[in-house]
Image 1: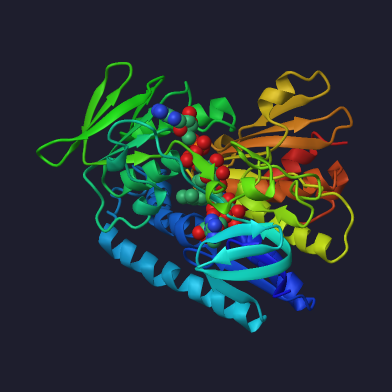
Image 2: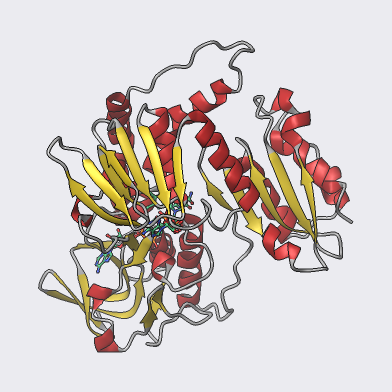
Length: 446
Ligand SMILES: Cc1cc2nc3c(=O)[nH]c(=O)nc-3n(C[C@H](O)[C@H](O)[C@H](O)COP(=O)(O)OP(=O)(O)OC[C@H]3O[C@@H](n4cnc5c(N)ncnc54)[C@H](O)[C@@H]3O)c2cc1C
Ligand SMILES: NC(=O)c1ccc[n+]([C@@H]2O[C@H](COP(=O)([O-])OP(=O)(O)OC[C@H]3O[C@@H](n4cnc5c(N)ncnc54)[C@H](O)[C@@H]3O)[C@@H](O)[C@H]2O)c1
C-alpha cells in the first residue's frame, strides 16, 4: 500500500482529519486538482468576509446618519481587491507547507477511482487502504440559453473593477451576501428570485426585514420570476429575460442559483459508491456503500447545513473512526449566519417548526430598540428564542449586526442545556451584545 488514507480534495472536509491521522502515525495524502485548502479558504468564506469588511463599516456608519455622522466613505474596489489578493492568495501555500511538515503527501491533479483500493491521478496510480471523498460542490449552472454569459461566486470574488450594474439570479446566501457588498461598492444591484422570499432556511419575517432594509437603500428585488435566457447586446451589456416576460439590461449577470456536488468525474458507478442528486450517500459513520471509502463535507447528501464548520466536524469525526472510534456521528446544534447587511442567523429549532409544536414556545426579545446605546444604534436588532416544556433553549432566530457573535454565544446554552442560573452565575463583559442578551434569555429558562 502507498498510503493508509487518501483524501480526495483538500478543503476543510479533508485537511483537519488528515492532520490528526498523520500526527497519529498514519501515512496520509491529499489529492487536489485546484488550489490546496479548497473553497472556503480560496474562493468562499475568507475572501467574502474580507471584501465585506468595508461594506459592514459603512452599514454601521449609516446607523448614525443625522446623529453625529453626515457622510459615508466610498469603497475603492480595485484597492480592496488588491488587498484581498495580498491576504488570501498566500493562504493555500501556507497550508500546503503546514501539511508537508506533518508528512502529508500532496498529489496535484484530478482523482478517479480504478477500484476501491486504487485511484489514478495524472496517469499515476496510487493505492490506499481507506479513501475519503471530500470533493465538495461547485456553482450550479442554469440550463438556459446564454448561460455562458453568467458569472459565478469565484468570478465575483476576483472582480478587478466593480461593474456599474449587477443582476443576481436567486436570492439565497451567495446572492444576498454579494448583493450587499456590490451595492456598498457602488453598483446598481438587482436580484431575481423564483421563490416568494429570500434566504430560505432563515426566519421568514427576519429575511423580509433584510429585504426591506436592502430595498430602502436602493437594491431592487423581484420575486416569483424565473430567469429564462441571457443574451449579449451590441453595447456590451447583457439582456436578461424572465419566463414571466420581464427584461433587464445590466453589465454583469451572476448565476447564484445554488451549488451541486462534485461526484460525476470520480468513476463512482464503476466501484458501486452510491449517490443521489444531493451527493454521496453515507451511513451514520460517514461510510459510503463501499466499506473502505468514506465521504466528508459538502459532497455528502445530507440535511445538515453545508458549511465550513460542519465539513471540519465531519473530517475530524472520520479521523477518529479511522483511529478506532466506533460511535456513530452525533452532530451538535449548527449555527448558520447569512452575512447580509443586516446579518441574520439561525440555530436549532426554527420558528416555523416551533409554531407546529405545542410543546415549544417562542419569545421575541427586540433588544436593539432598548439597548441601542450598546448595539451601535442597530435599533432593529432582535432575537426570537424557542424554549421547550422543560424551559430549555432549543433554538433561536436572530437579526442584526451582532447576530453572528450572539448566535455563537447560544451554542453552549443549547448543547449543554443551560439553566437560568448557569447563565446568571457567570459574569459577562459589559456593554456587549451577548452580555446583555444571555441574561435576558435566562429569564425564560428553568
Ligand atoms: C462564496 C461562498 C461563500 C461561503 N461562505 C461561507 C461562510 O461564510 N461560512 C461557512 O461556514 N461556509 C461558507 N461557504 C461554504 C463553505 O465554503 C463550504 O461548506 C466548505 O468549503 C466545504 O468544504 P469541503 O472541504 O467539503 O469542500 P471544498 O472546500 O469545496 O473542497 C473540495 C476540494 O476538492 C477538490 N476536488 C474536487 N473534485 C476533485 C477530484 N476529482 N480530484 C481532486 N480534487 C478534487 C476541489 O478542487 C476542492 O478544492 C461558502 C461557500 C461559497 C461558495
Ligand atoms: N454564510 C454562509 O454560511 C454561506 C455563504 C455562501 C454560501 N454558503 C453555502 O453555499 C450554498 C450555496 O449558496 P447559494 O446562494 O448559491 O444557494 P442557495 O440554495 O442558498 O440559493 C439559491 C437561490 O436561487 C433560487 N433559484 C434557483 N433557480 C432559480 C431561477 N431559475 N431563477 C431565479 N431564482 C432561482 C433558489 O430559489 C434559491 O433561493 C449554501 O447553501 C451554503 O451551503 C454559505
